[in-house]
Length: 135
Image (tube, rainbow, N blue to C red; front, side, top):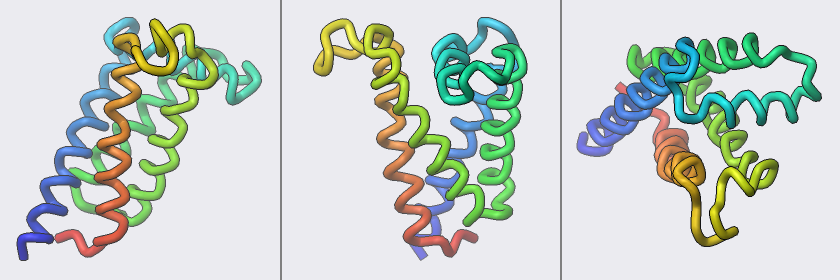
């Protein structure tokens, strides 16, 4: 029973973070990661998607993930999508080390710390995936 409660707390907290951080991206200059996200998507898509479109698509993705967790629907799919997303959030460490570190690799900038906190989210997602029976 405690495992189910813990899973629910993890799912709800992940849902809140995704919903909150995703919603910020709908509003220009509200997200501290906006430029980093746009630049990363530019590199990943070979600049095919305009940045003003890519940030909205990212916002929709993140808000959708958050809602799936908060509503406790399509949980397995939400976990998988979130794991793919969270993995991609580490790419700026390699693509833009000058933005991620003041002295690589030991002293992260604020943006680097913003990325680094995703280790905790990734671990929580893996835990949820392992214990997929969410209530």
